[in-house]
Image (cartoon, rainbow over all chains, first blue to last red):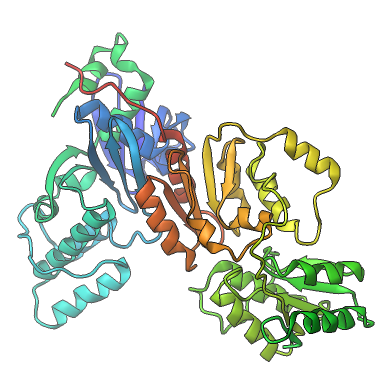
Length: 232
Length: 280
């Protein structure tokens, strides 16, 4: 079985030997031979034998890793954010922002490339820029720079606003399990910790959900089984 | 405004309405939005009028340029339809109170100033006119919602009553709470055992202005609250969804793939228990 999480910007693929490959989604789409047994994510919808809703994959993947009875998990993608609140191992509530993708991972990547920012070294900023609308927030970043802030400082303010918004969007939990590419952005994770305890799950959690759904952890494929059985 | 239900004594209002409806008109065609006063609708029905629901999107009708894009899609549709059908509409029955919304009131005022023949026929009825047979019947949600919206000018036939009566839901799987979406394809995602609540059910009962009833829900069932984007009902829906574990969905025009996915996830996960945790 080959599993795929086809995100808007990056595609994550889990092969039968347990290897995970991450590549730009445009490369995956450009390869006309790309085909997956089980997939999630908008980009892979027409490239698979069976498709699983992203939020369902997120919930299954997280529940396979986290033993708590109640917790909140959020997945921040390039263009949308989705969370689920689990109570008594059931989904008590969920939401998926679908309106404005301007304040999400893709914007951070663009800003990082434009200003040549290393997010592993960027220091969190206690000030924040309101990000209710990502495009308006971009304008505020440029305003801050025009008023003398360094680009690094202004982008860190944007990240702070983003973390504030995400924490509120997830109903202000005290502990947040974080999934998606931003788990690898040190400045983002540190800034989010100003608002709650954060436990990063990595960016392969949806693949884990697919594997869990397919029940392959019980199959003979040991490599996949080991992948699924990783604990935190 | 040709007539205003809020400005005349009831008897005088209906007498003058009968006179208007009885006069020779060009097309015998009446536009309306929301669920106007039933007696007013009945007067035009008795005079053989054809009804056009201006809430329903029709391709190619263009909203006037002065309308902000951040206006509820239904209001934009009403204005676009009214302008496109100007030559065919003899009268427009306008719902302007709590039975519709504040934007309905503004829309009536705007159309009146644009020389449309507007009659304020807001629905102030507080006593149910019929049971909620369709809301509580099993079957595809879209056709049921559409049928409810036609009740104001096309009452249930006897055989329809028997049909819906025979399909009453004993245990609903999910509740749809809210207004009909501009994009009805959203409703195709719901299971047949979906019970209708909120404003749509109030329309079936014939009490669209009893908005206090919109707050009554059964929190033991998964509830999907639908509102148009930029609608004042969004606050109610957001609060109720968060306080009951429901899901608030809003739409502006065509339903996006992300909105569909969010609904599918909610319907797929609601009420399901996952016992398995991390493996040793």
